[in-house]
Amino acid sequence: MSPSATLSAPAPPKAKALPGVALDAYTGDPNFMASLARGLVVIEAFTPQTPQMTISQLSLRTGLSRAAVRRCLYTLSKLGFAGADESQRYSLRPKMLSLANTYTASSTLANAAQPILERMSNTYHESFSVATLDGEQIVYIARTSVTRVMSVDLHIGSRLPAFCTSMGRVLLAYLPQDQLESFLSRVILTQYTPRTINSIDKLRLALRNVRRNGYALVDQEYEIGLRSIAVPVYAGNGRVVAVVNLSGHAPRIPMLEMQTRFLPPLRAAAAELSVFLR
Image (cartoon, rainbow, N blue to C red; front, top):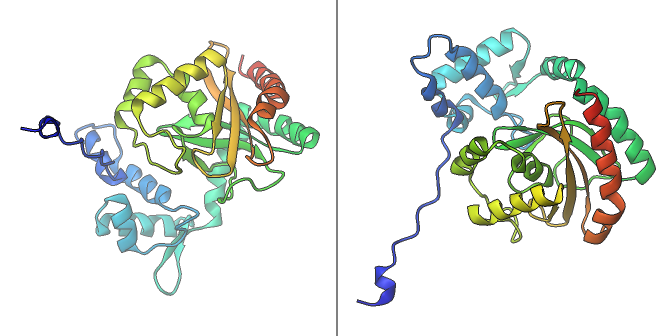
């Protein structure tokens, strides 16, 4: 038998459960409102890339039955949060912004971050952001954009994968060990560019480097031409609860300039934000 014949076949990639199917984990919990959860799953299915969908498309995307999707959309439409055009393609309505505005208005961190980011953009003429971790993604809670640095239009509420972005790397690096292990056990390392980290071992090493250096510098792992640097924001209990980031075009901002010119003001902004969390 040849040596190669003794090698085991590579493990198939992990398949991520559809969000509607994932709700089955709560079956039997008397306090869990399954109907509310299904409605939120339907809302989250709409993205900038797919702002309009039919009931069938939403069913396929969410893993919910067509009947369940139809009831969710009926309720959302009656309340003014969704609607359909003549071809029965549904989309979210502007009233949905009231939910986001409620969060932003009640978030001390978001309110404190926006003027700090605007001041930094006025000084350095670059795009700055603040984000938090939500599951396997980062969520932008404050942002100023001087120039468009990505092919997608980023705004407050935008989500990006945590494992291959500078903000995500910082937030992951400072997670408690059990939470980090849980993340690593379920994350799917999508190869967005040839530079994207594509193994758990490499990701672990990158996260250790973040903790050692106190910042993350990611070079074109999510999108070719995008380079970013991020630093942690600490709460009063010493936990990292958010991150401040600068993102820019790789050909225009060398790696060394990211570290020498922008790292000190990013750390100063993070320290300023930390004051509001004490």
